[in-house]
Length: 175
Image (tube, rainbow, N blue to C red; front, side, top):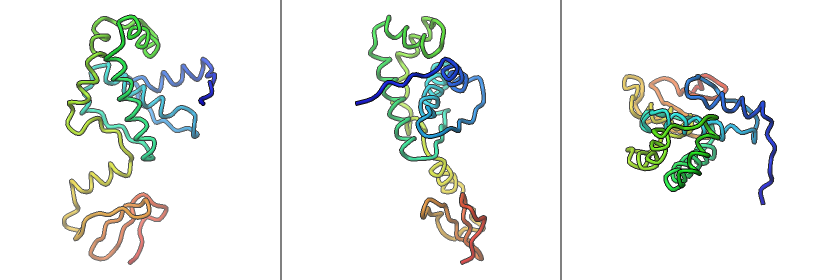
């Protein structure tokens, strides 16, 4: 059973501002405060504004948050593709805080198919997974004699003389 939470108009205004694709933001807040909601809205608004799915990179800290964001974005896009005109217009009006144009409504209907057709899908991942993918694509060939590895939530690169820990409290660890 889910409970209803009342959100103040000030919080809604701040969330709407943070979800605005025209501004650059860093979202940091306590658990349960609406970060995933804000980032989901931001991804949806980016898609509505014409940004192609393959141009969006959304990074979160935990695997659970990334999975939940992917689920929410996909669910909303699927919903938009099936809503009747009146309900879709109301949903877009609530998110954008203004009446949507007919072009925006038409775009909203096609976004689910665009997202499904995007190679690799929407890029919503953890910071650690993104960093690891970059290291795998661009190895430090002169320094690395092995593949980067993740252990205990930290990314390690073995070099000739040292074992460097990236993303931990200590900058380097000696073997």
